[in-house]
Image 1 (cartoon, one colour):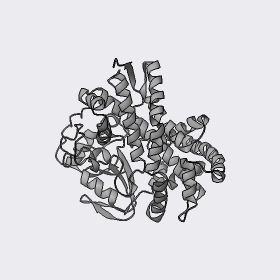
Image 2 (cartoon, helix red, strand yellow; image 1 turned 45 degrees about the vertical axis):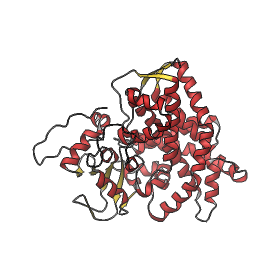
Image 3 (tube, one colour; image 1 turned 120 degrees about the vertical axis):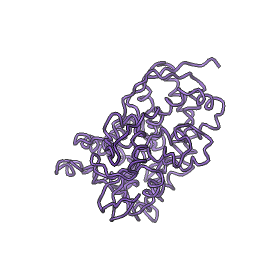
Image 4 (tube, rainbow, N blue to C red; image 1 turned 90 degrees about the horizontal axis):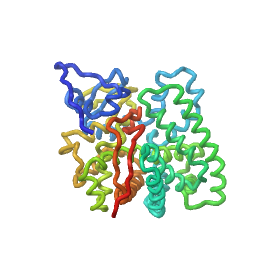
Length: 417
């Protein structure tokens, strides 16, 4: 994962960035370093918006309430005029997910999610997480050599299934929804076909939830759907559509993001003997390690915001309605902030300043669960197996948000311990 050399441009000329370029998908950091030096807040004609790359500017942007998270309109840029009508479920439910809301609605729904998704939820997962990991590792041992990118989705999807307490038969739908949601909402090059696929997945998953919710209303359990129903009936209340949207959002965030992180981090660890040694000899530091690897190489490259009014950022005048690409991938390797940013240092005193989960009001509510899953998997996997990465070149996920591999050939060999 070395950063490529950066070509020198003539003074005053800034080379634009194309998020769909395979070179950028494989290595977003070189472009970020160049922009940090040449134009830290840069208007990209290719991307149709401002790219914010330095750490301090990224933190300021996420804290600025004038920059709006409500950005469903971004999905329909350059789409046929009738696409919103054809994908009404996409327009409605993606717009209601908490990380796409602002103001009172965001505060109200986030407070309910935090109550439903608190430390007790993570504790409930810890009770069965080891069992799930061992079951998946048994499958890895039987296969020996396999595509870990596919296997990586099994753990977070099964965790979400257990949290929601829904039958095994619906697990493929959960995975399909997560995949289609991220394929469309984070596509480096969005197509009408991706939006139509997502719309169908949302409607299919709504059919499942709409059948389960009345049952949990009558007979609540110790599951996330019941917790959301209880939150819905509180003083702040969730509407039915708001509840469906949050269930979609939690599933997507819990499955796709964690799965992609498993693949990139297993490569980083398996190819570095020092990191393997940490995982095996200091299991109590694995949580710190996965937190550091979420900074770099990371999983989330950027998030978008829309300017709600004219404002100034990084010396540039941003106009109301402008789109901003706020780059986690730039902030997390900015040498102005981080000493040796491309090194994995589990003792960083400022690791809490990482942009991995998005700072500020929209900080990811599932961050603790994600890191707990990663920690438990790597502890058990590297204790039980020698893990080899069987490829040097990777086809990347075509996403402007996520950094990840479409495929990853590995070999798991049981250790003689």
